[in-house]
Image (cartoon, rainbow, N blue to C red; front, side, top):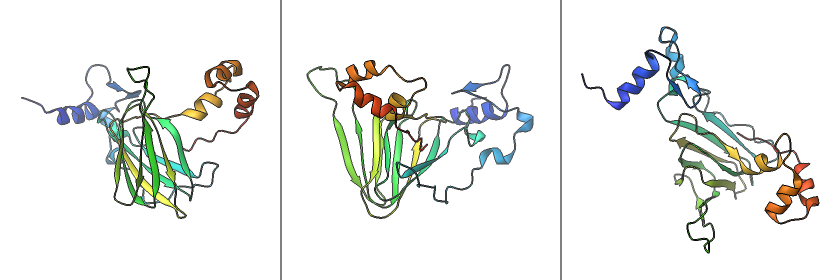
Length: 208
């Protein structure tokens, strides 16, 4: 009998055959142990705590929080912003993001990467978003969201992966353990070494 792609994915989740299905770092659950709660996440109606040094917090709902997403290729998140809070420049290596603003005003954007013509610069695409607006961040490109309003902002994002991943640029470059040799970063960013020393000495908060 012909089986649709969607039904195959559900079957793979509930009834893995031979060796267990392994997708984006997750094994399918034993079918004898699958329960309805594996497909339920509660709490996205609750605001996240934005009392941190970037003024934002992301509440993810991916396969790490919701086992029923395994093999289905989708996930989502809630994003809360304090006034002037920012979701710093970051990338999702495994997913495009569709971003819906439901409250507040945000300045958002993404940057293209390594144009074919070396004479051209990476291009910045930006917009101001208002409630009901949707903006798309293509997979793998550096992007950001910044609350330009005097009130809180709330948004929801959907991703084309069960486990999109997040790499926050400043955290990765200046907050690694062990630290990147500052001479490397000074040369890469074309600044004095003391500037790199200062940046590496900061506390880089992870809002994801």
